[in-house]
Length: 311
Image (cartoon, rainbow, N blue to C red; front, side, top):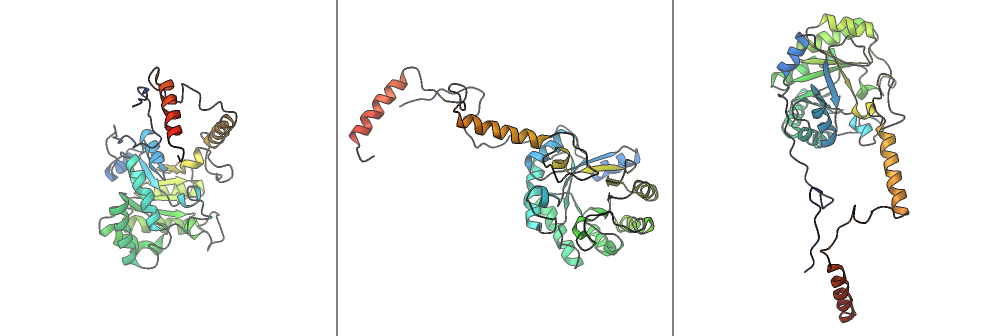
């Protein structure tokens, strides 16, 4: 009866399917990572937790996207990384995978899914790959994880190692502080992980000199986070570098934007405009009927209400 004029080129509904993202880049593989390492080209790694953050990794040409268990704290509000489950990690990694097409995708094995039993570690890593659409898994630990890493890699699951400050073990080791009592212990850990089959190792909160030494002594890439610029690559937490939180950004991170302030200000402005009725603005954010139909509608509606008093 009454037709709404459509604004060509503008979405007319609040919920909508996103456009399928197709990468314009060649897919990054482990061979790509190895070539970057061989050519001494620094490897770029960024965390992501959902479709938009994965899409940003895609658009910014990251080499690797890491679905880090840090999402427990920065995306889900947990007090530490330990509470997050494998199913939660899988849920988030599936979303990231839909947005991050070209970067090599790594998923963080959460606490309790690989430490106590090698068979559980293998089964959980396979589940992560199959259900979470990740291409490798990351796990924490050094020499003590040799057998576990060896078994996981032997079944075809690539592993990214992680030594230095290992957040999942922070509570047992006295909180978040630079661990690894000696350079020799860290080197032994790195050598063990390399021998076990890791394709790369994250060095977290390791003194620059030690990180550089380890990088020179092993034959696989080191990915630094608070470990100096002589590592083979660098990784940071996306929400940290975007300035989303005021208090969570660590010493080793760098804030490249202040998105948190922008978001807060945008929401405040929206709230104010709703209260003073300046939003939505008639014509700009509203729909119109065909010319002359407004009066016709009001006349019809009044008659309808009159004839339906119980309405």
